Image (cartoon, rainbow, N blue to C red; front, side, top):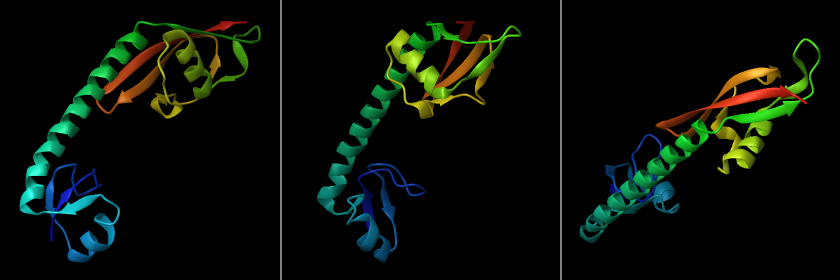
Length: 148
């Protein structure tokens, strides 16, 4: 059965793609969940509108992510933490702490799942934190941990 995907479906395609799937898969899963619509003559015209709308949304999201990356890369973030004489922290700086400081300093709303921190920061100094804003855009943020 030929169907037109309304939304992206893993391992099948993106919005606007016309795909051939098993009849049961289309009738019992894709169509009831509004993930696809049967491919008719009128619906094929609708495909073009879906595809252009999807491309426009992707283009806007990419442009927004690039502007956020410029903002984040140009904004050094300073975090104050309690530390011992040897420079080791009492506790650690976690992803949640980094996200909170980025929201305060840069004014950019970031989800904690976008911040990649291999392990919690446990020492004073300058550290690089990776923020994945988009699958194609990653920002490197300089995080400076200072003594409180």
